[in-house]
Length: 321
Image (cartoon, rainbow, N blue to C red; front, side, top):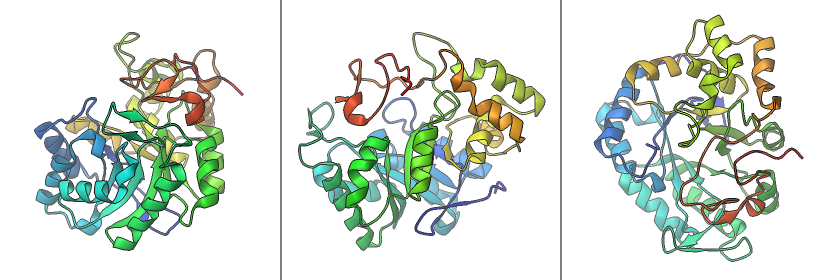
């Protein structure tokens, strides 16, 4: 197993700081997902991140069960879908799909509710179940003994401020898009002050289908220069920067060689960490790299950026406060 120090949630649960992301770029993935997870287990990964919305929990669980690795050595994350009217039922369905006795971490994938499946009826922030209603149902899952930690995903300072005053259990983590073009310093500080670890999805960026053949991060001269300096891959630099900031990091690769590299951290010196921290201050680089499907400009899956608490333009550029 890779020699990577564990992080600790606010409830004392240990979490491997690098996980294998199981979103395949489209819903499903079938045997490709199982094969990817099997190779990742062999490479030393012990943290796997899936979701009901990915439609591949069954394949992830099968790879884990067939690995022969003791369950207590593995960390499995999955997420609640958009229909927040049935939190308990959705949780039980995910548990059944995974074929496991328990889930290590269960997240509210998005703060908003869409009834009758996507694209169904999108509820506004004030329509029940609200963020608070959903979280109260999440808290009840802890009493089942079938989940160790609960958390959120794609929550902003705004949506967390709506939620936290009503929490009996503070979220263990908040999983968001995070990389040197979108380092989320304000959200990171806000969460850390409240004992919430950030988790980075898409830490290697994501190519825009109309803009570039490679992720923008892989063409940035600061990042490529540091990869040369440390005799490392660009992905290693990005993942090491994220983990060194204290962020749980979820890259994805189906290539065995890249898997092994991604889980092998390099120690970045302080000056280089600061150089990576400040990339987003360069003109045009402070922006999200994710392109969300089935979403109108200025919205994500039917919710306006304003409701999400995202300070961004329809093109994905982050507006400075």
